[in-house]
Image 1 (cartoon, rainbow, N blue to C red):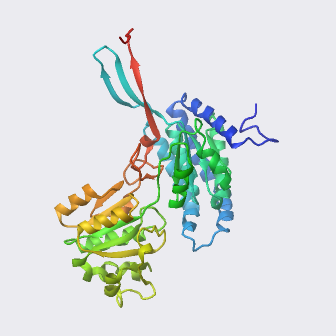
Image 2: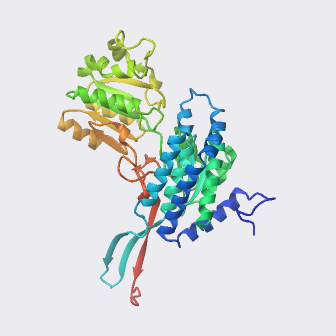
Image 3: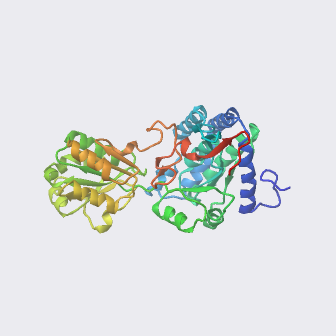
Length: 426
């Protein structure tokens, strides 16, 4: 029989590979947590031992991308990042298994014993752009949760992903595990057969731009968990601690501009408008951040913010995920207008309020519809590691199954186990 390992003259189709993967997922369910951990530890060792090969493949991808492209940093691998990836693999191996947890147990009046236990989802497909570290991350998390992985990366990272997949295959083989990972061709045409693989793929998780997420949602017949796109706001209320506000704004925007929890729009109460230049000093002088300001904010910033970085905002400036050193600024009359703006332009990812008002803090927490809502802190904390989940598969912006940082528990489902002693229903 043709298998993924033995195929030489004939390349299996995407459908055939998914059939093999479904079989591998069933076999994973029979293996111990310790066996799965051995594979992750082996992959960590192989990653450190093969850094020159991985970096050479990554260099081929980088050579095809403009260094000014916001995706360049996401694509980049280096020795420090590879060491961090290896450390993450070992950390995932050391996390408690999410499988077999008894989520609920009770005895019914008829004597039946019910329990609800965590089980693998099965086959999880990840569609992602320009981030080869995702190939490591999602394979590791899926394996720890007992799932097989379908990986559909972009052409931007094709060489890197193929080199990583070779190490994954070797780690699986070295530890006696089934071939529980399939890397689909990088071409766009390879995506649709995965999105419509009902019965073979249990769920699709897109990670990338809003355009990618919209395409997957519109074309998939397999269930989809939406993640990634972040149009994040910080609202500076009146009253507010302005020292906190300055640091929070700077951190949320400048810590790392290419991530989904980076600040895209600053909302500022009209009573704080005179303080705006001071709040943005570090962004202008140290980080060279472009600011697209509405009419009132522009008038206050003009002459107090670098002129080559200060732009007039238009309607497109709001509701944009910049993914670069740029942000918009809008003046609002009160918290009602701030919440209305977030509702209209946000992506339900991460939203923050800086306020000294207990009443307004609680209103923002209650009324803002987002996966994560912050009071007096930076949106940069939306991350599975920062939430002490150990790791994450992505940030879910929807409300079914999972929301916010998706750790190992979010990669499981559950089933009911019913034990009886001869009961029949009348």
